[in-house]
Image (tube, rainbow, N blue to C red; front, top):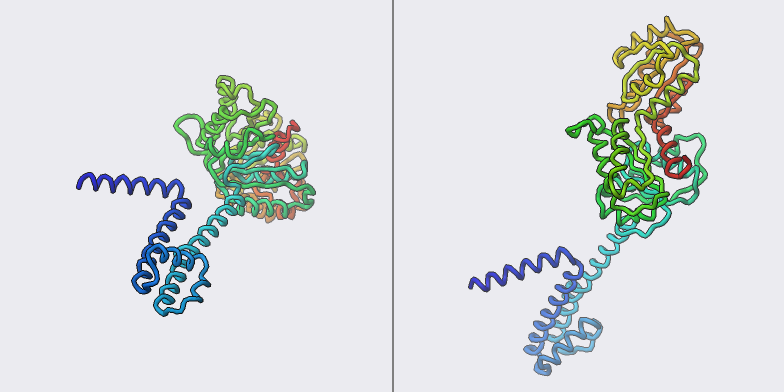
Length: 427
């Protein structure tokens, strides 16, 4: 009895494994087995109700009824005709209907995999973007402006509809639409998975961008690196296992400059990375330095800065001691507006920084609130001082122009321009 139970357990286990590994093949085999059993039972029944049949001729007849249902029209014996109808109906439900359902399901899964860029892809000369943030739609637009019919694959936790929706919204916000087109493939998956990287044919790519994870810049991973940069570092390590040619440009975005410095040092010591063409750039440092250049170009000697974000320190570092600075917290909007309206002159610039610690739907809210408060204390059209506003969402650009802001810095576009130039080998 124990041997029988053990045999049953092994058989059940083997069946479960086979069903998990090859569900379609196993289902078809089960259907064939069920049909054979059904044919045998129907053949036995036919020999009982009609003496003209022996078992083998009954099997042939039942099989013919299943294959050619119209054959039962030539049956004149009532009992045999009833059995024929039962065989035809059960055969249609048991086999034909199930096969149609399997084919339909398989076809649907195939089409869904293709639309989601699933399975192994045979690509060449394509640009790969690993991970997704609010800069990616702007990068795609920049590629459309510089290339025509370029294939771009985005591998992240976003699905195709989300990425396409964001891209269309970004295009609609532009006054001048890009004339070029791209072949956009969006694959929802894990960028840190080596098997995923192998399936997207990364070795034949013409460029690669690894984007920084938004929303995790403040989470510490147990050391100086924030969680977002630590996650980026692991992706860079994976590149050591990928045979990318030395001429292929790779851009890696980090949250902090210290992470950029650490990754540059690590790259030199790891086999498989030291020979790769990797450019690391700190999102916050690059934006901070860009804003410092904008301020310097205005010729302003006095700065009234309201708000604080991760770019501020880099901006002040680049400005040095060239200007005098008055800083205000985001909560001091009224004091900022009053002081600026009283002390602002031709040599003054008001710097309104976006809050990068809020959720995406609240991007730039503090910028609008500050400008509204400022408009109640002085004329925005006839004021003497200049206003430089930083925003995170490009869709807010046109609304901000109504406040007669001289310089609007759209963070995502600054980074996207740099990243697209890098991956297109223009830098």
